[in-house]
Length: 356
Image 1 (cartoon, helix red, strand yellow):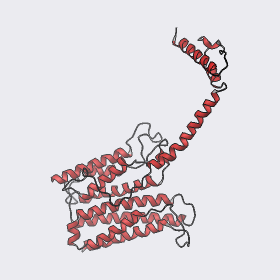
Image 2: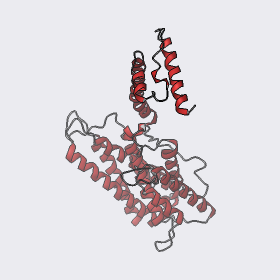
Image 3: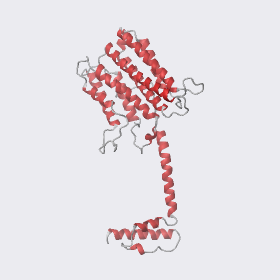
Image 4: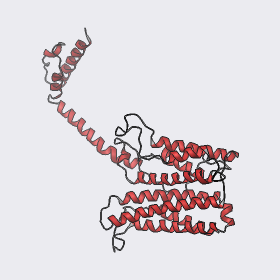
């Protein structure tokens, strides 16, 4: 007997049992028992017999309920805006004799990519694709780390501007510049798989850890000079100035409405960047402690760190973009912008002291 004949006979036996379980007491016609009589039309008719409709309806309802619950529950499960100001690297990320700031950068990458879920590149079938605040916050952190990676390569990680750049730092800086919204496959760009954002950031973390291990052994350079610190904080201040311009433009173009779906994007991107700079600058204060003490900068440095801490901890329940002079509608972007500009001014003051 052929496979088709066996399948047809098995299908007839199943139909026969089902009809008896319905209580008809009769067997269905057996015209389809032969191989020639089997067809998908008969299968469709069987599925639409009385009783089968209830099964199909229940299946469809269960599927709809699953979809309706999958995204909300998944979003609640995944959503994390981790702005812990007291976050410290694990022992595995910090090597005695290495840089505190490099260890913090590597630990932040590990936290956002490995411990939390990196959601900025989630495809449509993942709950994270429906999130808004978390991906903007994560990308804000990564933008601050990318700027720090560039400064490590260009300033801090080599003895003089004309010396050779560190290979690990070059690779780390390049990986940190990678867009945060790239998944492994995007048919609008290429039919071939591509490197995901997570894979690039994990590579950057590995390179930072390699550099720090070599630094601890004396095989790499971290030049703790006043001019290097000056150049680094000047670049950070310029980047914060760019963020303040983004806030100003959004307020000018959208303030006053009760619903502004773009305000939270700007707010959380800036919040992530401020948190990233807070963590890096706080650690750089330990790396450059002798310079800060020598230039009598401790009070100014502590005030700048305190301002960044306040800015990174702003967390209103709903982001409002009211008119700056409104009586009852707040403008959280303007509040955030105030702390951002205050921190930028304090960074400039530290720069001026370092120049003397």
